[in-house]
Image (spheres, one colour):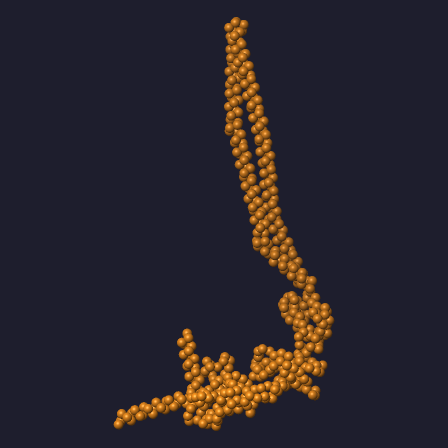
Length: 487
């Protein structure tokens, strides 16, 4: 019996747990609810906003160069024609810098020219030495030819004299046998033949020494000198070629190019020291004064068409999705009735400090507006179809510890409870809201016109809202589990 009692108690506990879980996620029993289908109808409402009158379009004039302003030739609010002078730069600093750059450029140019001329002079000297060498080579060959001819002539003369002396000796020996001459005369003739033969041999040896030793040595010495000069010439020519090829790569020429660019910029500044108006109009937002040092690209002033004005409204970012180009706007000015009419011309794509800038152009009576005027306006939203719910059907939640289920930068989430048509299960759904009034709340996203939304008495809605905390916590755990599985 006690065993059955324990089993029954366990079943009761399990039933209570199952009933609790079913209430959180299905809410099928224990709560009486009403079902409401969202209403999709046209709602008439205007958006209020404050704005200021501005010039539209216009031409911005920027400082074309960095420098000191010598004179501002216009005043704020002054009408100018196209080409009128606006401001002038002080050129003293530019002229001083230009002179220094030109002096440095000339110095570098002279230094590089000196280096080039030095190489060219070295090459010219070597080529002159080569010409001198060629002349000496020609003189050497000429002198060798003469000496060679002289030696050949000497040998020929000695050969003729020796032949004649030998004939004379033969005759004297015949005369000596015939006793016509003395032995002394014969001996004298023999001595002359021997002397001539010795001189001939010596001349031939000298000729051989000159032709085989002296002349080749002279030519070797001269050729070695010519080769040395030729190699030096080739080396100097390559040196000059390398210098000319790398002329634009060395530091001096790179500095010269930089200086040349700076000189051109300064000359351009001097030629355009006076800044002219790019178009006619009214000078607005003058930001220069005499003696001011400005950087290049600084906004100096604006020139606007006096007739081209617009109103820039600051609209709450919550109404951003309701804004459209072409919407009609009523503009209210103090002491002016009836209000002015206009239309939205442009809408900024982002909000600053929860305000969206919206441009409005008047359709009439523009002459009443002046830049800087502060105006009140009503943007007409009549004719816009909205998906709306009664306020009690939408739950507002401040979710400070559940950032994983809300978008970055939000601290509030909105929910409704929906009923599944088939299973009749009740579950929460995240929505985005728009326009709010005492009678309705606009649903921007997260809900369709055919959805079955839960409404009911206060007790039932409070119980439903109580389940959101557990539902959000369960959703966070599911997100974390999915994130862990995916990673």
